[in-house]
Length: 127
Image (cartoon, rainbow, N blue to C red; front, top):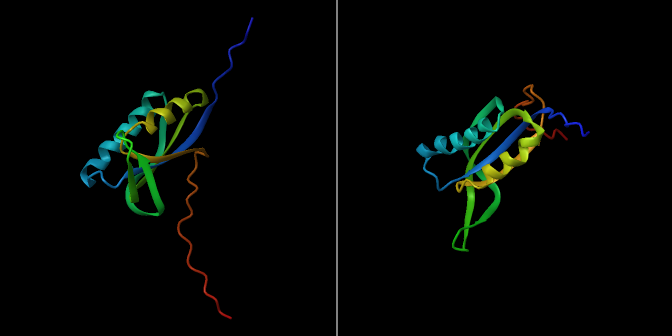
C-alpha cells in the first residue's frame, strides 16, 4: 500500500511584468486575471503591491503569434505574495505565463513576514 504524500503549504511570491502596450486603465484587469488563477488554485493571498510603470534595465523581446517580436523597454511591475500547496505551483506558473499581456514572471519561495527594507540612501565618498 502506497502512502499519499502530504501537500505542504508554502509561501510564494510572484513578480510580474505587464506589457507597456496595455492602457493604464486596463492594468488592474490584467492583475485580476493573475489573482483569479492564484485563488482558483486554492491559494490565499498574503500581500501584494499594485503594479507601477517602470523603465526596464534591458529590452525584453517576446514572440508574437505571427512569429515576429515585440520589444519592451518599460513595463508595469507588481508582485503578489500567496500561500498554497506546493503541488499546484507549476500549474499557477503555466496559467499565468499564457496571459498575452504578461511579458515576464518570476516565482520564488519566501516568508510570510514583510521583508522590504526600503531604498537605501546613497553612500557619500568623503575621501
